[in-house]
Amino acid sequence: MDNDQLLLASRYADGEMDRQEQQEFELLMSADAQLRDYVEQYRQATLALKDHFAADEGLNNLKQTLGQLNNTYFKPEAKIISLKTYARWLSGVAAVLIIGLLVFNPWRKSLYDQYSTANTMSVAERGEGPQTNLEKAAGLYNKRAFTLAEPLLAKAYAGNPKNSLAAYYYSITLIEDKKETQARAILQQLFQGESAFKYDAAYYIALSYVKQKDNANAKKWLKNVPPGTSNYSKAKELEEKL
Image 1 (cartoon, one colour):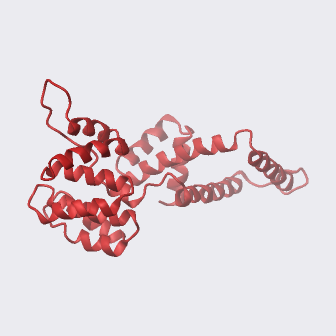
Image 2 (tube, one colour):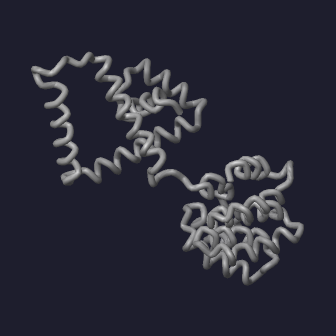
Image 3 (cartoon, helix red, strand yellow):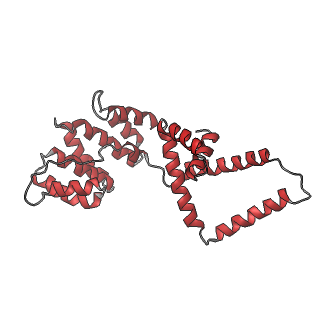
């Protein structure tokens, strides 16, 4: 994004736009996922910075610096700076700060998180009676409580290693819990078989390597995701970024 877009995004997030500007900007956001992501990141960054600087020495230092700038550039005997020049100066400072937040901010999603596709685990419910381990695990998995879902899926997988659904989602919880090597052993078995998860397994083997920043092996496994499968477009896009 260019500086103008960054500044518009910050004005929108800070509630500084009038009604018409807001509507026009929201129209832009509806067609630009990157712009939507930036606005959300900016909001999170603003909240975090407010917490960080609240009653903090850093805030006092910032005030002191701004005071010095005021004395330097806006004292009576100084040359008057036009509003347009001042606005341009502020825009430059704001752009630098915003770009810095985007480049170094801790809220940016990793490639693994951006390209994870198995976000929901669906299990056919049996109706009446106590929940199975798979049903309990699905509820936890869908809340992203992977550490809690993992032992339940481990039991379901151990009870029936041929259950490809249990094997697949168990593997993903292992990846989430930084047990990539263990996950890959199970996923490779799925890939060598003929279940519905065959190529999903290949994709997640690649993602397990992405998580470990092993791009060479990640690219190798992404090539095992063929056209026409659910993760093919994601695989090609990810391969280009590695």
